[in-house]
Amino acid sequence: MGIKQSSSFDLQSGLPLDSKIKIDTLVNRDLILPTYRYDGMKVYVEENETNYQLKGGILNANWSEEISVSAEKIIVGLIAGAAVTGHYIVYRGSNGKVQHADSSNQSHADQVIGMALNSAILDGNVNVLMQGEEIDASLAFTPSAPLFLNGIGTLSETAPITGFSLKVGFQIEASKVYLALKEPIFLI
Image (cartoon, rainbow, N blue to C red; front, side, top):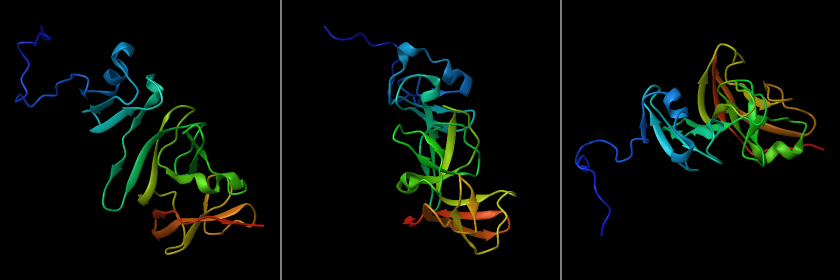
């Protein structure tokens, strides 16, 4: 005996087979019952036109935006391992969560992944620009100047003198930077 099929089941309907795949708001995404959730579950939220996936568990804190890639911009949604400030350079720790990168801590050198685009609290969602342009009035450096991680998460036209030096990109014009991480150089 086979599985009974609903009378409304129609592969040609233009609707998802699973009603959890398409959700109208973030609030309703977070209201999906734990019994329906699974690690790796994906949903599309119409409210902000964004895809989300449960990573590392089934709690609301485990939702992260799926990677979106365009010709020159790569953004990934991750979880904050501590409070994160927008437009600070971040690294991804062994737990998979992001925190401010510190140029004086050589263990961060090979783990820097990009710039946080938003601020987030511990276990909050943070979008990380891995490559591409970002426009913001706070990003005011000399046009064409190379930009480095210097200190804890901060962008600077000056390379650090201890720890490691990492060129993270350059200033394109007023309020616009281009992020493109280079290989770190370990300083003695």
